[in-house]
Image (cartoon, rainbow over all chains, first blue to last red; front, side, top):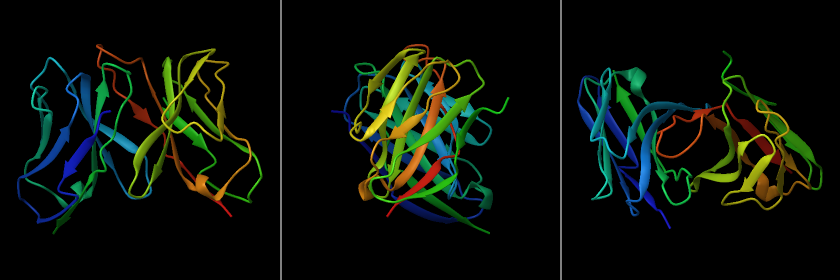
Length: 112
Length: 115
């Protein structure tokens, strides 16, 4: 059974810092991995999707990497801003079941 | 495009009552799913559908029914509400799943309290 762990659970940084969020998963049989952002009381917004054949994806200040064989993905946020404050969730899609399994998320606070 | 819409935004039920959570998407997506989000449990899949007329169970299907009569709509029915069903419910959709690497789009959620 796929298990997804996100470390750290919470993170507080001053504005302008570069930071890395970690996601690890136990089953490397995945089609892809998706990173989401969730603001308090809101739904999930897709940030990046990395297919299993890719090593990384970039969108603006965000860069996500994937090492499928070691069961790890990282989300790199450059020059963090207070507007980046949210919970970030990773979700690999199992190639056995076709379903997403979500981590518990990392709650990020960026202080002005 | 409105994307994925959910109604109602908030709902309070008494134990034993039934209700339907509505979900609609206007992106012509084949794959739709329902999740519940609980503190400490993350998001868990309730039911999903790979196309009109086809539904299947997810990780936590007990107490919930679904049907998919059209591509656009995927309602979730609570048959007899229980306090354990107090949660935030999210509907999601995508073109499909698998090797195409389809991005999932989520609705804004329905916050349900069962007393």
